[in-house]
Length: 241
Image (cartoon, rainbow, N blue to C red; front, side, top):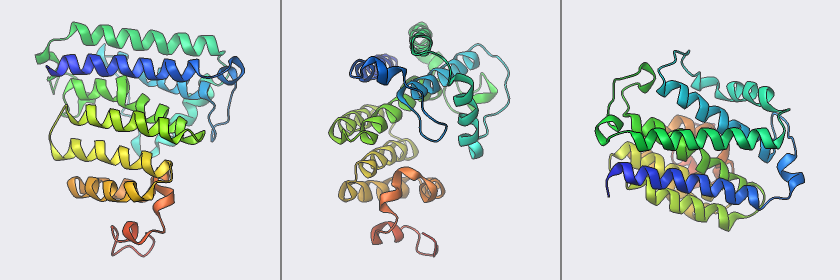
């Protein structure tokens, strides 16, 4: 199967996973508003819709300031405030609209177009397909599987994360890509309290991509691993690890 067809399947799966989660909630749960440091489901969906819209504007060539990755929590807090009072119906309509439009754009692209690496400044040397996959599938996968872990449905969250990791790993065999997929799976196991599976996956991801070390050091998803000797061994010269 060509990469484009795999991407289409992933986008479709991401839409279905989000719809399944929404359908599992009662109207009051879907309409509930959370806080900036404790999102409700509606806030998460609004967040996903925002970043999908950013991607659509990127694909249209609309100029923007670089995303401040170092302060991404502050950026997301602003997004939260902008959308916190939106009713559920508007939030859901927005994310459905952006998802459908991204799928439409994906279907219209050729394999060659998806591999272009220098059409827009925001690509930073990455092919178009990776940028589209980020907000078209991977971002949502992380939030949906994380939501299940947050509400105690660990088996369901792990099921989605494991399946997603397998599909994503089949798109690119480079060490950095493989490391990112494995790292995200390690995070899901850690969120579920499964240290036995999380630690070796984390170690493998850091071996493949040492650039992840700094992020793993502060990643809240890995909080349950901090006091484990195997985790501390990843930072032998860091007394704070």
